[in-house]
Length: 45
Image (cartoon, rainbow, N blue to C red; front, top):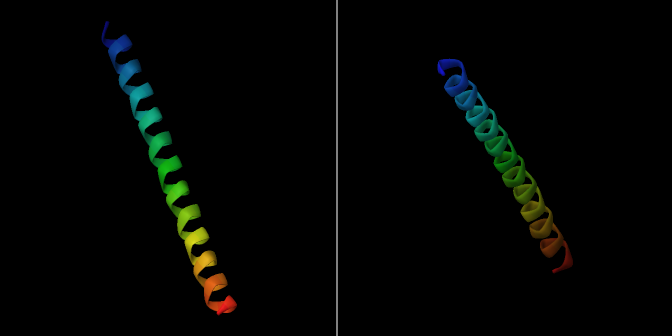
């Protein structure tokens, strides 16, 4: 029983870590895109 619950905790931790990694990557991509759009906007004007 103990092994089963610790296994679930491990899966939860992995999925949470994976989710946070995706979130950070998405934020990074969005910031790059925002910077690119800003530079492009300035260059057009």
